[in-house]
Image 1 (cartoon, rainbow, N blue to C red):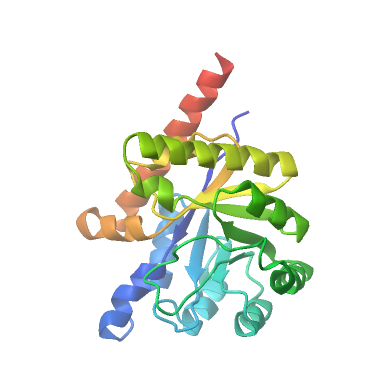
Image 2 (image 1 turned 180 degrees about the horizontal axis):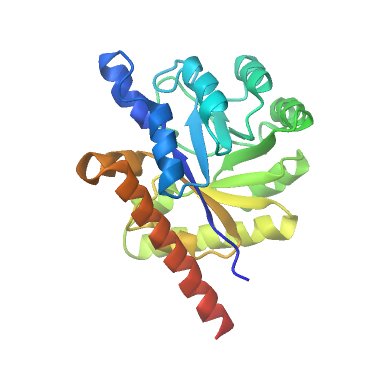
Length: 251
């Protein structure tokens, strides 16, 4: 039977719009509820050190009110570890974080940061939190993720989404090879960052990818047609690409 491809909806930038003016509107928790109704399988929220979008209160309300699993994106710092252990979300995705970046610029250097990351992966895992590492589609980083005991990796799809023509084909091949290597290592493989209606199909068709995390594009599309419609269309494109790919493999 074809495995369901999960969709995680990142609600960070609903909070970005709220914080631009202050107050409580638009409410990211309301966006999470709408995402659930539209077919999301989980909600992702990145609690940054500078609290530029999601705030501590948002995490508290999401944990209290949300029926879907919460994936907490976080830097590997003592502050964020304490917050994760306090709330025990379903999952925690460790990501690199710089104060000067507009958005996450690349994957974690797991190979170079082995000694720093090991205790965070262990503490989170011991608390029953599913740990994932946001990494570039690179064999060395995948091997390092396996070595430090993380059960899940999320492949950074940004280079693929930003490329055009033959360069995009090259980046898609990198994602396909990385996902296959992750599966060979026994790692659960996710992908995210920059995916849109245009770019999601080929990534959704990769059989060894089991979850896509998409946020900024969906929040942007919500301005024009509503969040519900944007998520439902993304869900349909993902399902079609996965079904078409499965049909081709069985033919």
